[in-house]
Amino acid sequence: MSPRHRSGTNEAARVVTAVADVMAFVIGLWILMYLLDANRANDLVSFTQHTARWLAAWSYDLFTFHDAWARVVAGYGLAAVVYLFAGHAIANRLRRY
Image (cartoon, rainbow, N blue to C red; front, side, top):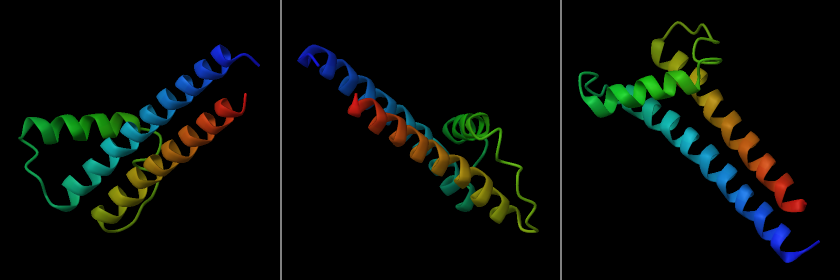
């Protein structure tokens, strides 16, 4: 395999890893802001909430715990973990080729 091809797959793997890390970071940031009862009228908090909800649309209401904080941690946390594992697995797969 040519060095040029190997470099391209390494770059792609780095991009996939970075995107997965940013997605997980945004979701984790929203969990932290929720637990610390951040002011939702603040633009940064509102942006983070909407972005995290969009990223975790498939999992944010998956669990039905009695406490709201447990639903947020479990639902959004699951999405963050899935994005991390999937992104890093895809990046590792790209690096092998």
